Image 1 (cartoon, helix red, strand yellow):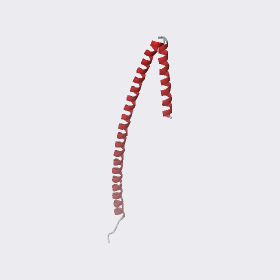
Image 2 (tube, one colour):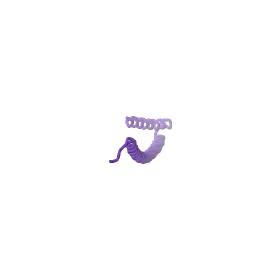
Image 3 (cartoon, helix red, strand yellow):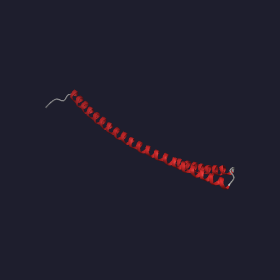
Image 4 (cartoon, one colour):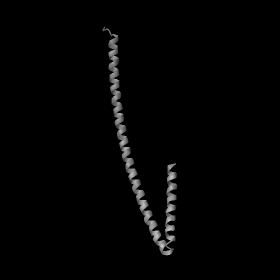
Length: 108
């Protein structure tokens, strides 16, 4: 029977530790690659979501502007030219209050 010395035992233990550390390093690298790819995909989706929200807000503001401009022109025909801007401004203030309320509720 072959003699097993302490140095043989230590060499075998170090080989085992080297193999385990290599496996841990590979699994950590694979895990980080998967996480990096998932983060890229989430950032890509979030970027498009923000772009669509910005487009929707710009469209809404444009529509609101044209609507209030039309209201101003209509009010200028039937009311005095002094009262028409106050009516249009009041409508804009109402929409600003509505949007502010919606933003506060969405934040909670």
